[in-house]
Image (cartoon, rainbow, N blue to C red; front, side, top):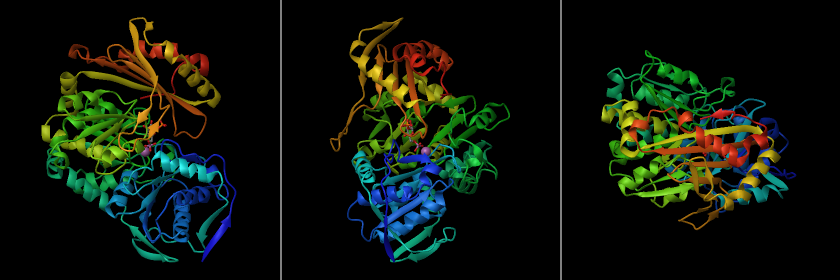
Length: 542
Ligand code: VG1
Ligand code: CO
């Protein structure tokens, strides 16, 4: 029986870069999750009788919210819910399931690379029928609704069994518990040359994947070990745990250091990869070579035709503004479209739908294509394996040759985490106030060519997104970018992105932080990072 439950609005349910993310105790407040889910439904139209996909990364509180969401979907008039077994769907898998079954949309429960557990992070995100994150028009409507909501609809019904594949009923709603992995693995087989990768692995090329006790474990075991023939155990930390084993499931040189060290050791594997909490990020490490996410996008784009799913070439590349311009050089050479968007995958959706871009990437360890509408960690790993298998060269040789052909974009991101919000806001405000005075200014050998606050005009729907990050461009192609994170759950995180272009191959072997040292110093000089925050060094460098 449908019941209408009275509730009061919460003031803090504004979706960020990727959905609403809060600590579990915040989400566990009375009606907190219900308010947000009802606000999603209230912002949508025409879903009566249609299908909703629900799944999450398995973190603490995942199952509880899935049960609530199913009852609410029933009470709000959806016809069918597809839910991953055990409540598990990686973000790219959820995107694929939405598309494959023509669902109206989906609810993805994840806080991505943020830690999980009773006192850690949880998140809810709504994806539309194209499989991608809801655009700002919808997230704005959801936020507006959360501020005035006074009731939600649910059903008097018991929890369902999420662990057994099959079909059941919750009121009039049909609930299908589906295999979390099968559809996704089948899609990967259509895109990549599994035969060639299997032969590569069979020839002794050793591949390991660290799933970081997060959602990609079951996907990686099925694909790498079962379908591609890697020995059992090649997928490490393969069982998704509600607290990710107490770690940050964030695939970068800080949190996936063990894997990195292993690949770099002489007897270690030839190729290592890691993925994040919800499976949309990736890190790729070859023997002697860590691949920056920006370079990864460029190399994938340049070599796309080697993968069967992209054999006819790509229509265009899109990257988030802070991502390095390495891919731009590839687009230029190939004579294809290049787009620069604000941070967050939701800005790629229109470009992919319109066929203007085929591959997309972000510096934050995210790469993907038009096969889904999310970034996709395992997809990127398989793409690299496909390229290695086809070129019969290791990762290091491939990247170094790429630099020799296109030049190298030295790149690093410095994060200052858990800064007091007022201090971070003051820094950004002061920086914005200075923009007009910067062009023409010289800092040592560096001369400012342009400075602005990035605004994006979506070429497909004409929408405008302003204030997406301050960028200071120097003559010769170097730049620094400043923005505040939209995914954190405590205080503010200042992200400083630093890039230098180097055409001369004789200068491609420099340590990254060294190559960027003068720019890093100038970033502090211009923004007054230490003066504003009291910090003398970043919390995380990637
Ligand atoms: C970060 C990254 C951004 C990414 C977003 C979601 O956002 O910088 O590139 O799209 O996380 O990724 P922010 O606003 O904190 O900089 V995930 O894997 O957390 O869904
Ligand atoms: Co993620």
